[in-house]
Length: 293
Image (tube, rainbow, N blue to C red; front, top):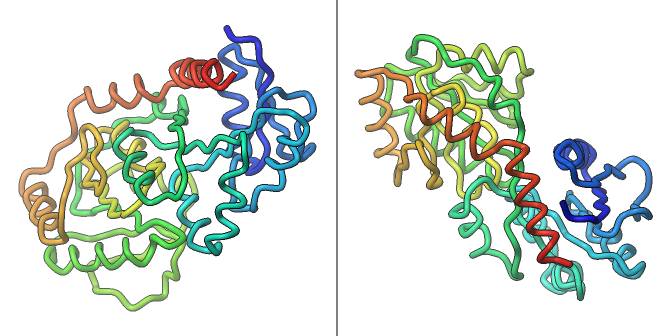
């Protein structure tokens, strides 16, 4: 096991999760998100980004520490959308700092990387919660959807509405952070945000998960659905998911599934549990640190 001290600063929830996952598997990792902006005891500082503009990374670099700008999913695109190019370059090309993107699959990382003005490494994220997921029950006519947040939600909702118009016998139940008072067709139900108990109820008998997105860098709901053996219709290339190229193609797949409802084989769940375990994550991070040092 590599002898290095790792500190996470930035978004508290993700800092805690990553630090706990690594420390539970033998690495010396600590969450400094609520203590200090410098992580004084760390050799490597991860700044888990919320688009703050980089003061943490700059201070850590001046203190002689290795710095990793740690972007989660497509948050980096939200950042570059809101900042003028000159500021982007000053923040994102800090000499000696490494940009890293956390995604669940190399093809998704490639899609994100193609839009970015800087080079990056890919880093994983994991949770043992997938292994605890209960298989979904008998399918109904309800399609669980997630329209995304940030700059994605309108694109996702438009795609869902176009698909729903071609599947009148199905109910599209949409999770998102958007206004649930929008005027939508009768077979579309805007649920907004839901708690964990309600989400489990939605998973229990849905026909499929439908996730339209341009840049879903960290598709947690997709992994949750696969762990429950729920068929997934997804805009990114990912094992055990059905891929579509248009609302018409998505509707065709959903209509066929409604005629022949089914659950995914156990190998879909096994793929999630095997590839997103904290043990595997820790090994990948250890290799990353060896290269960084």
